[in-house]
Image (tube, rainbow, N blue to C red; front, side, top):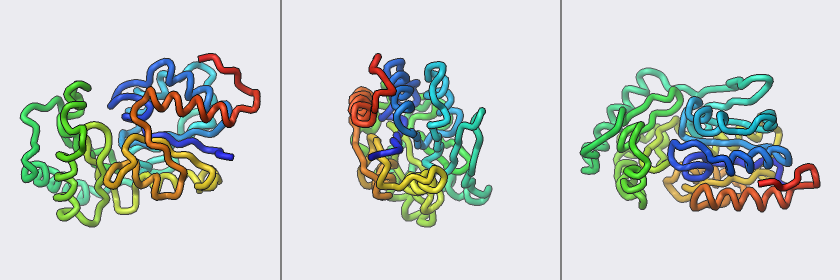
Amino acid sequence: MKKLIVFDLDGTLAESKAAIDQDMALRLAALLTVAKVAVISGGDWPQFQKQVLAHLPKGTKLKNLSILPTCGTKFYQYKNSWKLLYSENFTDAQKQKITASLKEAVETSGYKAAKTWGATIEDRGSQVTYSALGQAAPLDEKKKYDPDFKKRGKIKQSLDKLIPEFAVNLGGATSVDVTKKGIDKKYGMHKLHQVLDIKISEMIFIGDAIFPGGNDYPAKQSGAFSVCTKDADETKKIIEGIIGCLDDGRYKKGF
């Protein structure tokens, strides 16, 4: 019996940096009545508030929900209000080295975008993220930029040589995430095990980037049963199936 369902955010529960829609909100609320749920993403805490938490229906069992921003390098749990349990932050010197290396890798890749929307490099405390088109890029532009991950794959190859002491993964539609070595979604899965006292074998991970180099792949490497989803619509169907398997009559399907 699976006790914890873990989701990626962008490309899995919603489109890149977009809010979950009403149907997804209802499904997540329903799932929280029959299982514990966690969401792990490369985004920072404000992104979770904006994309997920603000859209869950009133009465949602938030005590069954765990939020792990920046690929599991932070952990929030709900106890009357949201509490930060830990944060694996970089030092200033580490941030400076990562930022300089990102700029060099992008320049040498030949894939520096001609037009960007907002800052391309974001300091998320425990993670530094490069967004090729900028933080505020339109979704349509982001979808067209690197659908096969080849552009960011070349940037990652350079970064792996420039900063081998850090972990580099691809996520979202245009991003490259840099965290401490060993601090990734696999680390997040193990933290879920430690904090919630749930075995990895009792978890399911659902994400859209479960491939070598994808920022969901470390979650699969944790040993959790993993399901690769195409998009949020497919995830809704997966959630319906999970509810059908776990529901013992406490929840009546109403979406």
